[in-house]
Length: 250
Length: 250
Image 1: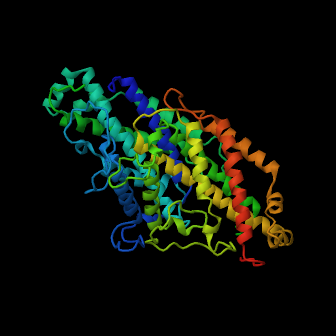
Image 2: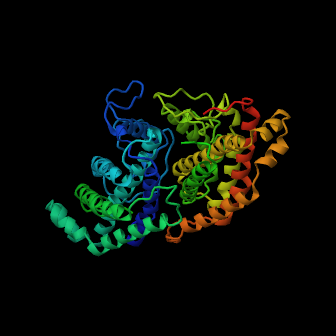
Image 3: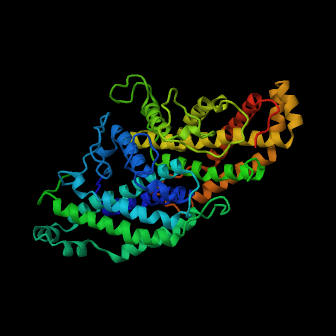
């Protein structure tokens, strides 16, 4: 089994799409509830500065850290200073050629992009479901981050292995622009965004629109194009610039 | 707004179906991983007796308790001795006429039913994704429990209000059997199970079966019929037997 077979990597990315879509649809069942994003407005005991969203994210990641989530390369945390895992996580060799997975982390960009997306998929106003809203925010955010970081690591390494000479020289020059151009396949990107639109349509096809708030497939298509794909490529560039020169690990 | 309008209650129950289905499909992306359900086999620091599944459930519910999940009537915890909420949860009056929501809790039956379902939706064997499997187990279990407890509370109270005289006398007699008969609408149950089958089909229609493991719609239809609907009715009976005599709260 070769984890750097491009069709396998692409399949994994594709299989993460359903998760992102279903988590965003779940979030959109609640109104925007803007106060949950306001620093200092959480009403949470002992918390005077963070928003309810930030607190929930930190709690979730502390729990996840104990269970070993962040031992997985593509699971990069939003929270700093997390505790160590309380269980041994045995992973097959990743084959990635990088010393610290966090050097490719794009969590700050991902959080910003997500917080701009929420008002585009949720109805405005408040429905009082603050706890449920932040819960679903965190699940959606984790699904999006996993997709971006997975792509950043595995797509980059896979493409490197397809043409080590071309990438090596651009990496040596630190030629970010040309690396980005070499990584980019517009046709593939268009296939992805069209598929997203179609999947959102299908996911909502069996739904009673009186009971479930539907999201606009075009909004998710845009989000994929402008943020998920773009941030994945930024992560790929970061990976390649951090990649240990020459080495190929099996 | 009347939360005891039967069509509204039924709508809420219906809108919970998508969540249950999507969480079960998410779980089924991982193999059964039977060791995660074995007591004492968690490999979790300081845990010699519980299974990884039980530990994850307890951690999740401790976090959720802090955020106030269990202030909501239909959110009944699986874990005992949870900490109090760290935020004030303001709910509209529930109109439920019962002193302790936990008296209708069916968590033990729900957990047993769920653990019997997992081998029917997941491929056998282990894939090493133990952390992800228990994470998704917990989300699916919470979605199922919410549906059952919501139905137990709100369907029962709604039906009581439609015919207080008939229910009152059966409650006074503690005639469980006749209460159950009065609550039961076979035609409605068949509509629900047929809809579930259809929703599972539709939810998986846009999916590439090479990438995503699909679950058998008939398995979920059976699970709804045998467990979700049956346990909801058991919960309704419990609610009615615990209901404070005569009172109707607005």
